[in-house]
Length: 393
View 1 (cartoon, rainbow, N blue to C red):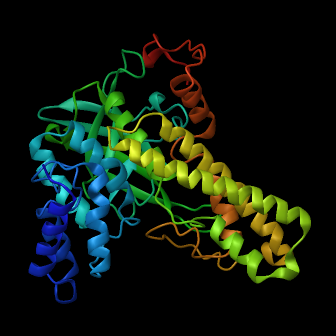
View 2 (view 1 turned 90 degrees about the horizontal axis):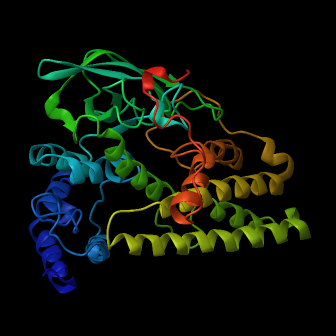
View 3 (view 1 turned 90 degrees about the vertical axis):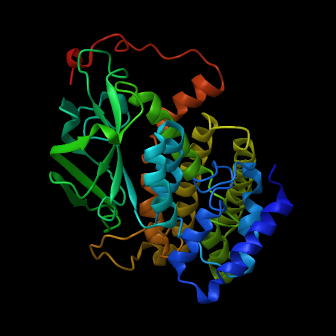
């Protein structure tokens, strides 16, 4: 069994064979993946060694100390946090071999084609259709709020393959090539001025059946793996103390004593404690993941993440007074990643409004926590046994 000492030995062998200072970044990352040191808990041959997930920190610490490059995880977060665990669980061996390595090293960026204009909170109501034709599928529909679609080579896509069954039962999960004919990406400008999100229109897009993930009609179950991992990725990211939104607010408080009031001090203290509690809870959640797949607990972390970001950014703007009303740059641009701490307070305040929508709306996540974590009675649902085609839209 691979233990910490064995992982250190393998990491040192990697560094000796591929010194970071003299090795091309992409070549080093490929060598790391092939050595099983990308995701140590993944199977051998797929970037891992079948080791306990908790030992990943051993490898990461050794490589960080040696100045080794990382795979820029923020840029490829959708691939790492959502596509990879879903492909690992439901993909064929051919799919795993084809997609996991270029995904992890960052050669191929991924996006998520789930939400639609008429199916956001109620995702299972989606109307994008996939019709079987020969050895493939023809897809037509529209997706929205698609982060990184303008950069992505691949997308995880759910589409309706059967309209004659209830909405949850007629969905199938696909891997879509964003460079295929019929895929159109349009920028969706946000309140921040940026267009990090996109609309994606799918017109007669042909997807071979070999890029179907899971069984036909089983897409909702496959999507739950993606969604559970998404919530953990958003709400349970690893942060140092005063990482995230609380960092800039605390720094402003320390550096600008003339802005302080007793009321703001009390509110900042309360939010600082809540942010630290959320950070430590996220660490505990990651430790629980060692035992298996993420469960509904990730919904609670994502809820806390959204609320804290909005309250902290609001406090920061209020603390800055008139300065908080300024905005650095409203230029329309399409960024490669979202940087909450790299810009001014006004940007953080506006961007955090989306936190209660993306990755599952607050209202839906509250239901998940109530029903799946607390065990409260489910809300009455009148559409569970009605064919999708008969639903009011």
